[in-house]
Image 1 (cartoon, rainbow, N blue to C red):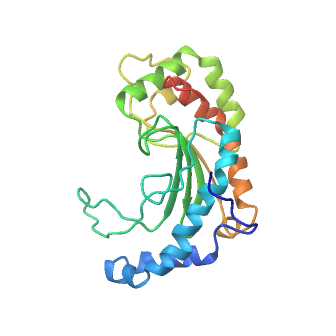
Image 2 (tube, rainbow, N blue to C red):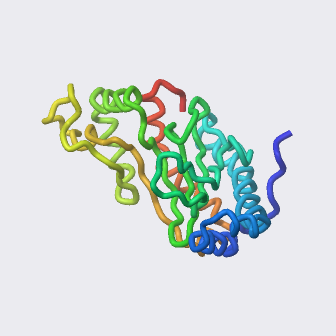
Length: 232
């Protein structure tokens, strides 16, 4: 049987943002271990409940995206930073993140819907972030092959959403510099986002607001998913 839905009420409270703010100011293992119960009660458990409750809403957007409430290996990003190749050796992330990725995806680089929670930085993002070279080539080819659909998609997203992310300085090799969508062919990311206030994230209807934002931008995720040869 699927996990039971949460009782009515907000998933997130100001306690989540308070914990993350204090973690930002005390980013060390001793402080975290002393406050581990707060992390479990105010951050991780609310994230798990949100994932469980979002699952039926996600299925209505697309049955091929996954809401996995497991605290490790599922939709919820770990709080621990990978410091192996970073000059910043602080051990913990100071945000909470959830990624509802495509069932065929294996990591954060798959098409998906994302939720970021941090003090003053609450946002929904969706699309394709830092895809590998083969995936990027497929997306660029889809834009060239379906320019009308791509333009219609972008028009439907405006003005609420605009594509974000890094771009190449020049058109990628093999693509026409005069193509009408050359600015998009230069992209390394295909992502849109929209922000919420901390207070909105703590409101009982936040899960609906988040779902509405995902639904409004789902046409981009559909285009990207199909460009990669996967069903939406």
